Each structure stands twice: as structure tokens, then as C-alpha cells.
Image (tube, rainbow, N blue to C red):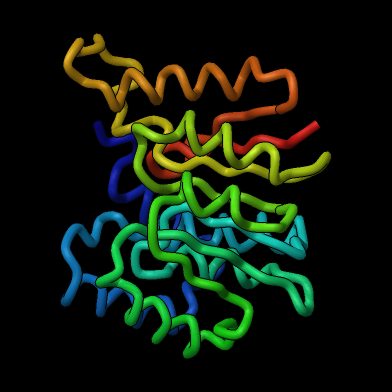
Length: 213
């Protein structure tokens, strides 16, 4: 499902903050060398993440799902001086391209890469996070929420990506489609969770903004 016309998407991008050159370079290399480049956060959503991070001014950020590092760089733009961003991905083959662009961006010393299963890594992090971005395996979203919440505090902002799932969340559910089923449950959980205040934003493929009470 296409939510906005290409003309409108281009207009939105053209009237938002320009994409930093380092991210244009990362986008180009990702398209040339990495499979599924559509997984990139992209210009418009990247600027949304950057601005939200600058509003929050987090000391500690957690990102679940690094891919080639585009969203991590966007989020790092809002870090407090001396702040840290922990980013987790299961694909060790992407480590080097991530590190290359983290260092070129100027945020390299503030970004800690973790390779492995986020559900195993997060409980081991002795950190309380001010900002969390979930953008990894959709079937694990409910489990990510369970391990993330103990690492938050009142005022922590939780961002969840791809919650519209190309419009499948409003279509008749295929009984075999476990991913959409879990996302439907996840979206409802965020809405009714007693510890969260939530609004679902129609940004790209859906970006939910939740605040820990």
C-alpha cells in the first residue's frame, strides 16, 4: 500500500531539513553494496528522528536494529555532551560499514555497536535509557518491549518503526501472517499499556511515539 503519492513525498522532503551529506553517502553505498536497501530509514524519517532526539536531548539512547547505521547517526545528533548510543544488530557482516560511517559522522566515540540477539543483550546493559528506537525483527516487538521497559524511566521516549506494515494492519488478516498479527497486538499493547502514553504517527511506514509515565 502506498500512503502518499511520490509528488507529495518529494514535496515533504523538499520542505524539510536537508539530508546531511554523510547520510547521502551512506545511502549510496548501501544501495550499491547491501541487500534490501529499502530498509534504510531515509531522508524524511531520518530528519524526524534527528529532531525528536534533539528535543529529548538524551544522555543514553538504545537502538534495536542498526542495519547500515543511518538511523543511529540521526539519533546521535541529539545526544547530550558525553552521551552514548547503544545499537544492536544480528548481522555481523554490516559491522564494518556501520563503523566506517559512525566514525566519519563525528559521533563514532559515542556509538557502541552490539552484534547478537537484542533479547539477550539488553538485559545485560547496565543503563537507563532516555530514548529507545525499535526497528528490528517485527515478530519480536512484544518481546523487545518486555526487555526494554525495565531499562526506562518516567519521561523516556519509545519509538517503534514500521507499525503500519505497508497497510496490512487494516487489511483482512491472513491466518498464516504471523508478523502482521503480532504487530496488531503490539500496536494495541502500546495504546492500552498503563505505563505508556502513545500516539501513532503516519510517518513513512508508521512510527509510534510513546512516553513512559
